[in-house]
Image: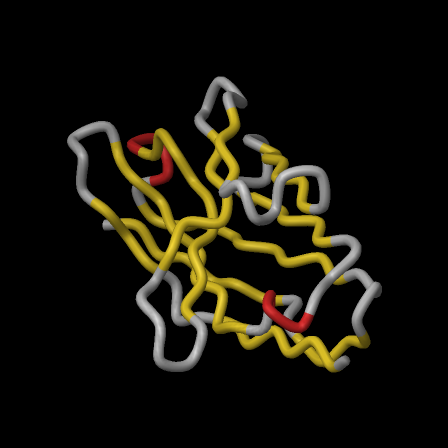
Length: 116
């Protein structure tokens, strides 16, 4: 089992920045990809960004050029630096991990609110 604890959400004005963190514990040796998804009110959960153990990254088109995902394997932590935030980025952000057998794990979610 893998446990994920996300943090760093909050309220920010449009154009501002936030950094989310997600710390993994448990069977961390089994983790391959980590990342973030988000779910806005009334919408489906969507991918924001992921990063593999080898640091290959994948971003949603809507955040490319504004968000940067990074990973500290020594600390078992993944970060999401979010710049130039827009009101449409408002959502609950969920930390995510996939282990080498393909099992998905989710954190509890952290709320990001971007005011216009």
